[in-house]
Image 1: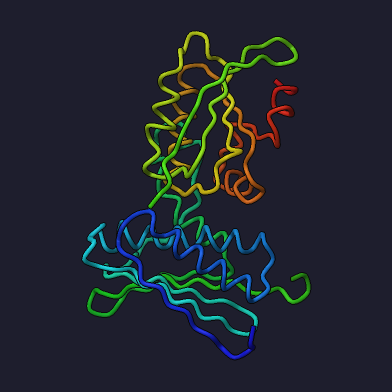
Image 2: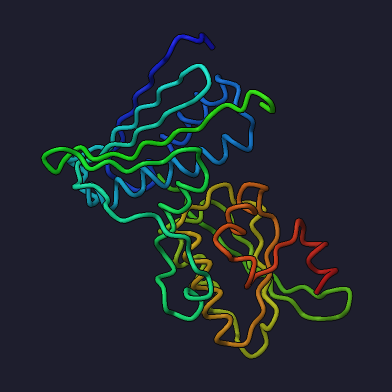
Length: 147
Length: 119
């Protein structure tokens, strides 16, 4: 792929399941950039979880709203922004505590943000101005020594 | 859009002679998979299904909602005195299950044969 920065955009309906369209697109771009298969799998899960959060929590499953996914391929990294019409997430990702979950002290759900942060090189949640267009920004880097 | 999750139950016996109930999943494991995952588990006879093996060989996509269903299954199994094991996860989902701590409550194996040999 050309070293010139390249951008790909996808708009998803706010319906669960359509995160797989973003996963496939991110996977295709990452393959073109030369990412290893295991890093592509990491990216796919992170993108899927970001889209699910945008669909469920950001747009509250309102199918009149769409989720924007912008992939920006640089020379040595891929940035993905997942944009919704919600107010944004202020909470910090926390590592799930399986013992607390098994004992009913923590919700079995709520692992999306943790997975996103754990699987990519950078993750930040940005609250949009005017309480709209909030986004999560993910970055996954090509490792020149091993990729 | 999400592919329907199918599940099937098989009864097998380990080389050591222990009866094992295998729950075989196919398709995506996501928020829509409650009946296929928890429903299929809850239909098992608790008095006789003491060793349960989850087969993920034909599962391509698991998201955090699907992982939460697996954790709910583990909670119910633990409360019923059942042991749960799993096999057939891809390398990526083996990593994800390990990251969220599931492996502390459900040992993972690469294949059904390896699992049955160890039980």
